[in-house]
Amino acid sequence: MDNSGRELRGYYGGSHIPCPVFEYNGWYCVTGCVNVNHTMTELEDGVDIEKLSDDDFFTADNPVECIEDLEKEVLDYIE
Image 1 (spheres, rainbow, N blue to C red):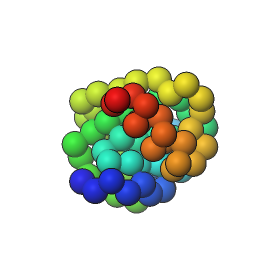
Image 2: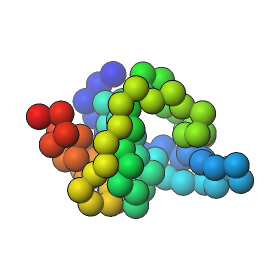
Image 3: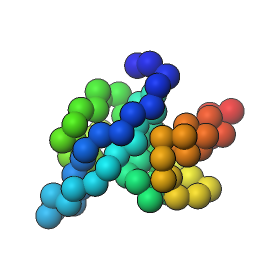
Image 4: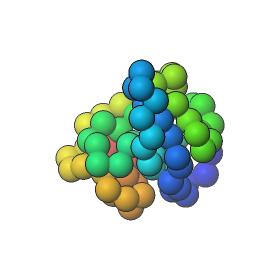
């Protein structure tokens, strides 16, 4: 995986609720959330995040509102 961030269209929950998903180097977060997860699965537009298998996770200090927020939180976590 590369080190660039991107925004995808995703879904979550039993009602298949649409949500923007930010992804950075395998880490992902739904916009406005503090739950950050890591997966080895290649994320694509239309991803159902409830079906992903996560291998790591953490709680961000602040809600993630953009790709830059996610990148900062991930870099702080892995350092």
